[in-house]
Length: 92
Image (cartoon, rainbow, N blue to C red; front, top):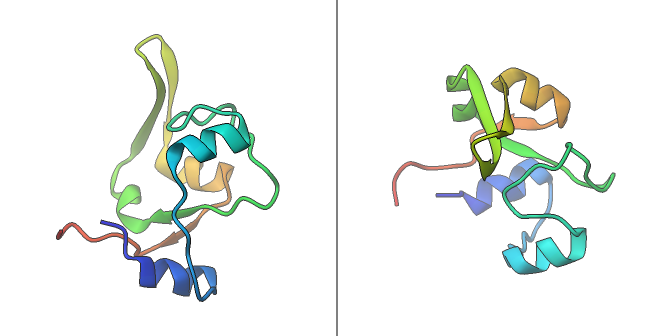
């Protein structure tokens, strides 16, 4: 579960709006859930929960077993210049 208060603190903002997946797909012209060549608008900021780094490798796919990549989780953080922080809770 995403901790909205922690995300606001990390982002340094008062309000966080969660956007509908269809709106993201339409506005950015991409398939939600697929990181197409890591190309995003320049203003995009990424926040990754620190638990992601508990996994040595991250698999990113397009839901096609023949179309995906595997990379070190620390490399994903570096590629997208993500801020690693505590922003999720395993409790619901």
